[in-house]
Image 1: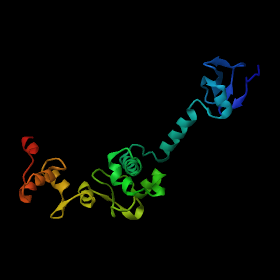
Image 2 (image 1 turned 90 degrees about the vertical axis):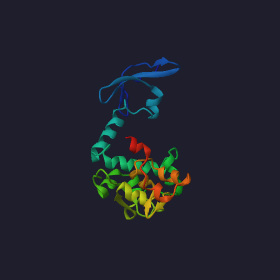
Image 3 (image 1 turned 60 degrees about the vertical axis):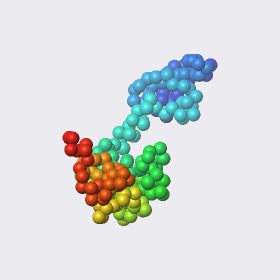
Image 4 (image 1 turned 180 degrees about the horizontal axis):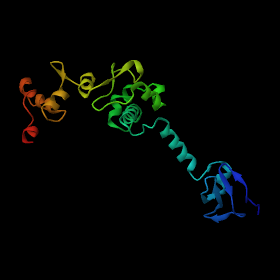
Length: 203
């Protein structure tokens, strides 16, 4: 049988002379350049499918994280959420963003560092908002805004005296749909937007 011992492929060095047959597959004992030894399918080494014990991928991930050092910060979470709304069809919010054709500019979509350079550390109480709600997430169409400002700017919010129903509902201590439900039940506007929710009174 052909000897493979001492041969190198990618980061692997083959250690045993003859393959080990298991489940009709040929395995060879290998040593990764990082020092880890394990049995690897010979075919995967020859084809390049297996390049290392996994240390290369872990190192690349570590380097990406160290590049900006902002992974899991508020700005990073906002960046991730922005992309998710535009490109993940499996979330409810998609219909109001990606489903309407809203996208993220290539510069930000593919590079968190570029997004961070534009916004810096986004403080608590502020988040990214599109000025033109029919436009995309791009430098000339975004701002940092409070939740109230964003509420006022949403296309799906009804307003009373210039204030969106969602914001009024929150001020009354109820759920976002509180005022809308009251109006549908026949409440007059004055009562619907001034009476505290029973939940807030009980608390």
